Length: 198
Image: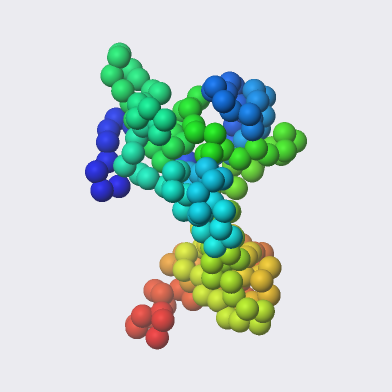
């Protein structure tokens, strides 16, 4: 962030179980299984009502905020001093406090240790491909970086019907796994003397 506040509890990708809910919360109940969402949805603003944007006027990603929106205060402290929030989630903790718009209720049978990657890596890569890039069927797509987000982007390109999905990564050990997610060919920039885009 531009003006980060410390100390703070980091973390944004997780799965959890609702322990309690605040006043006025009707969408969730104790025991519900949820995923945190660091770009939350108020469900009321023009962005939330649009199919083209998820940059909620109230809950958009803000790495600098560090406090709850309702009262501008932190819910974490140690020895009476505040510990600040991170992107509205602070998941590197046993318990956290989030705005109701920053959690998504999921099926309780989904294993939390596996579906936790849906709260960022998978939804980010897949969403960027299907909802933003929108590659036409038969198109060629290049994906730079084959980590969790890149693999999800490759899967999105495969679902969209791209005919060539070029995975670009400095680590050739990732290529075989990326093939399972739809990559059809690979480029390692280390193998070339000029920029990959050329």
